[in-house]
Length: 370
Ligand code: HEM
Image (cartoon, rainbow, N blue to C red; front, side):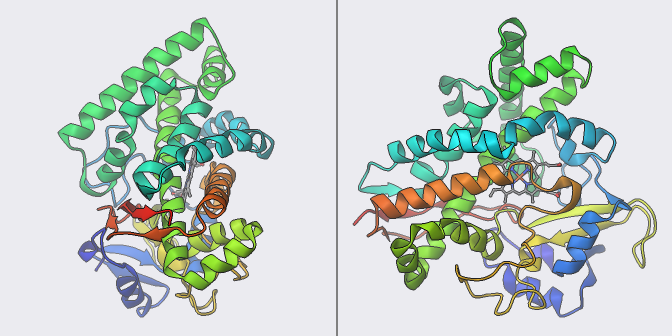
């Protein structure tokens, strides 16, 4: 059933058909779960793990250097630890003022495309800053993340290979510069770790590309999906306008109701219940986040909802999103800025959607400030 999915349509009818088969079912020869508790358990169970680019949803393989997202402990633990300091809550707090400035600077037009002119450039600017990519280099890579995301669904294209070469060349250049003149950015701290032989040059590239792609391709959809959900639910938009401190609640409900990352997968390293060794399980995050066993009226977008247990939009277990605090802060800042500067925001034309079934979001969303 999952092969029938396109990026354009609402995936939930298909998820519900799968859910009717119980918490764990087989689809196209692969195990699938729509259950929140089961997905959570698998994500936390060390008998399950990951494999480099071997995921069921990566049919064409990938050109990307391996990253810790695709590694089990002990390598995962070692590499994640090296990247973690840049994402500490204290660091994220320090970035907040910068993100507010970027958001305000982007919201100056009356008619604009919410994705292209706001939701995309904001996280691109933030992650570039954090990694230490100079502004003049970021423009060239605005499409890079989108190409990589497309490769999750359809394998590697020539265009993708070309973009990949460019990104690797950019990082090679920046790494060489930081070896000469270290700065206060993630590249510099990884270069220092490499000098102490705590990671290899290839692992460093893998980490940087992961952070770049994660930073480019996910938060854009959090901001886009949240804005669309609010405009489609005017009573909720009014609630938020009346109380901007609801921003974190809007962010959480969007993550649950319109999860930017809809699925991930795990492989069984040994036989677990009915699942055989080396068999893959697709974890439908988008479906788990609307599990009626966990969330009453799961298909309702309700910013006043109590989120217990936490949704799985950031995964769970050892691969829990390293950028979650950053993404939440960016979503919070973006939504507050929109509400403050554009309380009469309205949609002016049809939205278009991304092709991906893994990453859910819009390609364009024309809006007007009045
Ligand atoms: C709303 C925005 C975001 C969403 C929905 C999201 C979602 C996810 C998910 C679902 C995973 C785990 C996948 C799995 O378990 O197989 C993940 C991992 C990760 N994310 Fe995010 N992410 C977001 C933003 C970010 C940002 C802004 C960054 C930082 C630049 C980031 C960095 C990472 C990293 C480094 C990992 C790998 C963690 C590990 O393997 O230990 N993410 N993210």
